[in-house]
Amino acid sequence: MFCTDSEMSGKTTIKGNPSQYVKLNIGGCLHYTTIGTLTKHDTMLRAMFSGRMEVLSDSDGWILIDRCGKHFGTILNFLRDGSVSLPETSKEIAELLAESKYYCIAELAESCNKVLFKKERGEHEPICGVPLITSQKEEEMLIGSTTKPAIKLLINRHNNKYSYTTTSDDNLLKNIELFDKLSLWYNKRVLFLKDVISTSEICCWVFYGHGKKVSEVCCTSIVYATDKKHTKVECPEARIYEETLNILLYESRNAPDQELMQATSSKPPVSGMSSYTSDEEEERSGLDRLRSNKSNNQA
Image: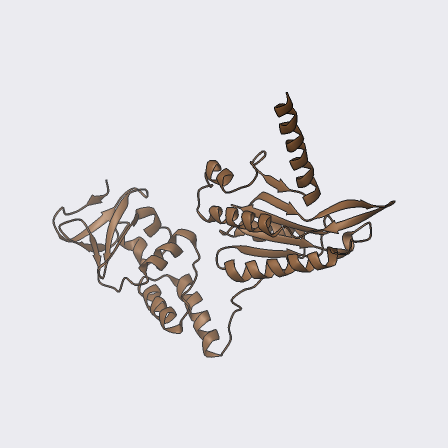
């Protein structure tokens, strides 16, 4: 339990273990958070909840702060994570700026000021931005630093050893178009990356959750035509949609339940990572199952 100088309603000082929860009433908006979150940064809230300042509480133990509570959830998220998405409109950003100044959260106030300055000058950040990978180190840094799940499209037409099949060029374009659509739909929830310099694959989708590779969809295979080998590129849309939906399960801080992952996947995961190959391998696998079932029935 945290300690107070008075058990009755009125002014009191609070000091307790960082893991202890406190109840906050911010202008009628109720919040429940830990002392550790409130004292994580050097702000007025740290002074209020480390025993250096008196706070007002009611008879039910709610700490009363006479401010608008509209943006206090955003402020709590900033204290937890060190960064936060700002509101869309200038009016709401200005409101958040006022609250940031009141609570002496300098870094958040600076971010609000920068965005408001850009808006006043008519400068706007792109709503959907897809980074182009320039190195392996940059890729690791981007994936490791984001709190979002990530999807990377590795596409490099010049990595082929053999001539392409007649439909491969169209399927390469289909993969690019699908990637663009997904990035438009899910850019607020997923980090999208494009790799056009890697020499390891021609067309491959890689899915990341919590900074680690979860699965991949390889869209290329080698096929035989007469006496020559050809490179075949496919666009397995259903599989890509499936893995995209699965990767959304990594939005939460906890890893998704494996039973849920298996229920939403057409294949059971192998060693914690699923991987897909070409349609020919799918067909061969299906034929093998049919032959096996036929043999069992005859037996």
